[in-house]
Amino acid sequence: MKTLKSFWIVLAVLPFFALTGNAQTAKLSLKESAIIVKGTSSLHDWRCKTEQFSGDITYTTNALTLKNISALNLQLVVKSMRSIKENGNYYEAGMDKNMYKALNADKFPKITFSLTDIANIKAVAGRADFVAKGNLTIMGNQRAISFPVNATVTANGIAFKGTTSFKMTSFGVTPPKALLGTIKTGDEISIDFNVAFKND
Image 1 (spheres, one colour):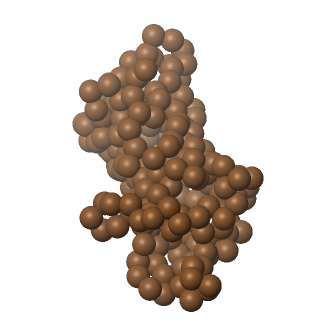
Image 2 (cartoon, one colour):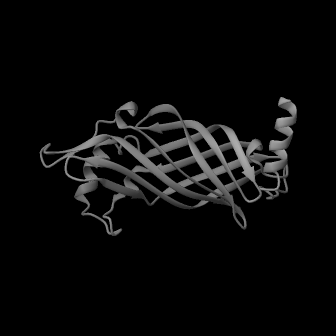
């Protein structure tokens, strides 16, 4: 019964990812990204977006499926994270200095994520929902995380969308303060992401 179930999962996923490669191992590169970090403070909620990023997907055999992805890596440049208002405009640069200091950006310039497993796949032609498991590294501290993801096939790649949340202190980050400590940031943050990997 387990073998039969796996067979039907493969049949469901294969038409979803009809991308083909010319080699035994192929790659897609991260081309588009909308990554928003959200949190709270004693004054008001806050959010920032990441403007510099890189990443890639490595997959084996000639057709990409969720099951034959051998690696997925994502890197975000800490000092490219900018605080934004509700209307999308930037706050003054001084707002971001406390964030860079809290993340020790000079010593740890990047936040990274590496996929380790994909579970609970529910796929139909053109899209799939699954649970992504991987290692998130912030300020040199690596932790295993898992979160739900929605994937959609595009003309020449794949787009992933989802949300994950965690406490900053679980990565050794002290929530930043402002105005001589009168404004305090909450420990819990969430990351909303919409990223697209495409053929070079």
